[in-house]
Length: 482
Image 1 (cartoon, one colour):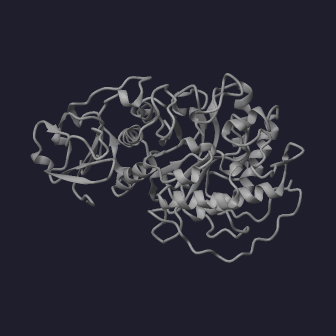
Image 2 (tube, rainbow, N blue to C red):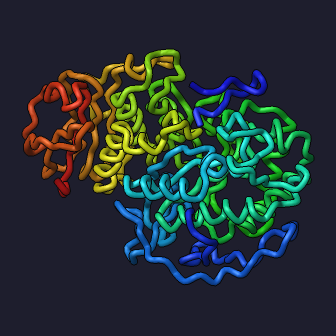
Image 3 (cartoon, helix red, strand yellow):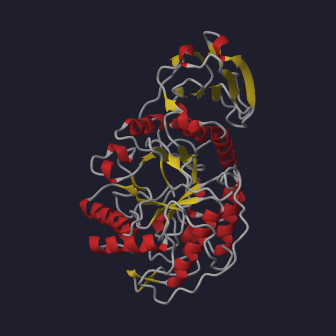
């Protein structure tokens, strides 16, 4: 379970082996390259002139040109994230919060290559460690003793720490993984950043942006954060410092006391996308953020982690994980962030990287990514019977709400049915040429149903899936890849 909070207003987070090398590909969308370390390095950064590495990104984590695919911006309609070529990219995240503090370079390589091979393309990471975000100590030290700051001064950087962190995130980018990076989070504000002024937060933001100019990152802050004026001031100044360098990469904040940033009057218009955070059934929180104006990506950034359950119920099951992801995607989320009890890298974490939960979630993501998912819009009219219900505060497995998303032209629809039942559809919303297929979300196996136009008035789910659950995904489309 998660560690107890440092203060009552915060909970703890239900959160490579190679020499420093030159960045492989300049991020075209940013057009800024890192040429030096921050002005406050204690030593001059060495030249980076190692040869280009062979690319090893897998499972869709490459662009059409064969380069690693990064999440670099937001689509023109405000609904999805895009890569460096402007193409939509489904967020397939993980939450290794304490990666930079808990793992030595060879261990980081093990984690990154495994997750890349499973199709993960994003990760939530704290730049500086604290016990509450999974690190071994509250002074920011790594497991082998590297400290981030000289004498605790956050504007005097220890080169060895930041060189290692840079190499780790560079390697992640080489493998097609974009880092959702928290330069300051709500836990380090209790320790290494305790009492710092907004001016210091602003300068730290600028230093971090310059340091990360050549890295594939999205900017994050907060984290299990219940707002206070002094902390808001630091986080706002941090963002101002980042922006002062010309860095316009998307920025978001994670709040604890509301289900998404879209629900907070102060932060709603200060972020570029909405971080959705709930341990209850996910469709309601995602849909609330999706329906907010103006349109911003409503990403499911945290729900129940594998091996944990923060609602007080039984340990999270693979069915819980399947429900969270598919409810989110059919409610407007442009992907999801998965997490496990190894967010703080418990002993033996290496043997749990290929957990059944991670594998099932990866298969679901593969399926969604094979479709033009970015054209879908959540829809309350397609299902006319058998919708079920969900309530705030419920355990995920106690809800049975069916959710649907449809493209405007009716050429594609997804219907997630979390338990055995019959459903009825408004077929007028679908292209007459659409075919219907049941997908077992635990395995990805498909069962053809036939033309959508010939579906019975009441359509029954196929019974138990391969995992023994009753949840199924109905896919209806005119040009399905399966």
